[in-house]
Image 1 (cartoon, helix red, strand yellow):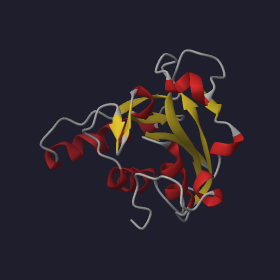
Image 2 (cartoon, one colour):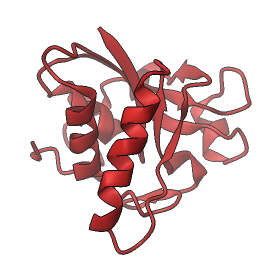
Image 3 (cartoon, rainbow, N blue to C red):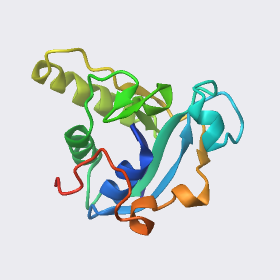
Image 4 (cartoon, rainbow, N blue to C red):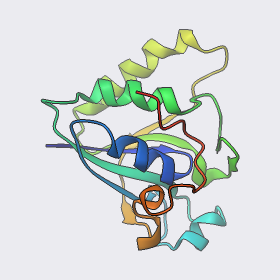
Length: 159
């Protein structure tokens, strides 16, 4: 079992998207890489905690590789958009790949380097170690399963 945390705008869609992928064992919505202990959604929305809305994944790398996860991630985000995805704007909606295993850093950076030529604008996805992760409130967990008509900036039909 491996772990990775992905920030791709509103966590509702990222959570639902990856929960449907074979080999992804668990998803959890939360707040990562900020400087406030156990922030609330309201605090994160002020932009003053430094957190990104993030989905923490555990996955079986014998079924789905990190590279495949990154390929799928890049299909549902705009990696050139700073602090914005879809209609969501603010630093909490920035894009990021936060690794748990230090050995994943080189693969992630190589993957992004290989994507640069496909975009006219610079890629602004953060690549950092996962410094912290705090679970989002329960109503955010599996939000689109509980609220199938809820807002989502991601096309969930993308494979």
